[in-house]
Image (tube, rainbow, N blue to C red):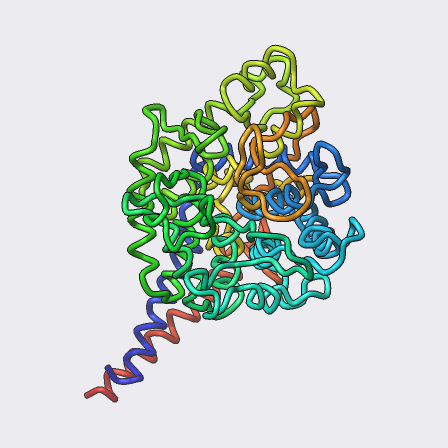
Length: 484
């Protein structure tokens, strides 16, 4: 098409569009309400944000639990709730890198925890911080230095801890390996070795084991370990890490992720919930949250929706919360916890479990994959009517999946005794209101700087439209002559 014709055609289109906007523009149509599971996720994140104090979440025995704080930060980042709290949490975690991934605070120097370092690397990327200069540490370089090399034999590619003393077998597990793959994929080129090691933790059935070590030492693969226990939580983490690896071009990652998702589907209960392994075998919100998030990431929308329904049934609201209605938004670890809170409120003893359960469970409601948190925009909330100011939510941080179970913190990386399993329950707090998307304004109603304007006289627009029509006709004639 000649340039003149392309130009006149475009001008004609612009003229018609301008006239339509001026003389017959339809009224702005309100965006569809957010899906119920997205609203539930934001409510949960708002409650969790209210649990932050000075940029951190407390543990059962300490004023700051850095593993839980990271989990909270990831959760808030997944929903886009409370930017102020997210920023404060990111800053606090950056200040306390060594408090989380070493024993320095205990006076024991020379130890760096591989799993905790990998989780910090992922958290920095998900929170949109610089992983190569996070609190003065290059977490990417540190994580790469902790990946076992070829001389480690079948342990090649495993995230390991560094220590100056002989501390026995490495304690890293599939959660740690998944964070290493996610963090490296999010911060630069992903080496193949860590991906291969993670894939070797997958058994023929499709599920993943939590620990790569047997009683007599590390086993080469899941199938080489007799009676290996397959774990829902570990499989959900691995599936998400492998999907991120596949997106990065890693060999074998996509097939392993699909096989893992297939196995997760076989583990889903009739009501949509999931249980873990060992002490977390019963249906619980932590396992359901991780599994639901992984299924959504793998495109298993129906199963992910069923998991979200099961999670919503464990969420306190103003209508069902009873004595715990002031904690609306919080998600119970299981049905017993929900019933107890509705009857007597969330006790101080139980609050820790509620924080941990909520941080991980809401990921199954938000359904933003771990590999995409901080990259994709958070799920939209119900829009605020045009001209209405959006409420600013109080500050609070995020959460990154950790194996949550009522008992031991199986999937928690890091030396600190932070329980990463359903933690105790929260006490009444004022939930931070979910942030709302800014009002939508059409270009025709925007003034300088894109600020909305109202009541503008239509005469000036009509004059401009007439000039555009005249110019368009003239150029159209000239264009036809040149084309002929």
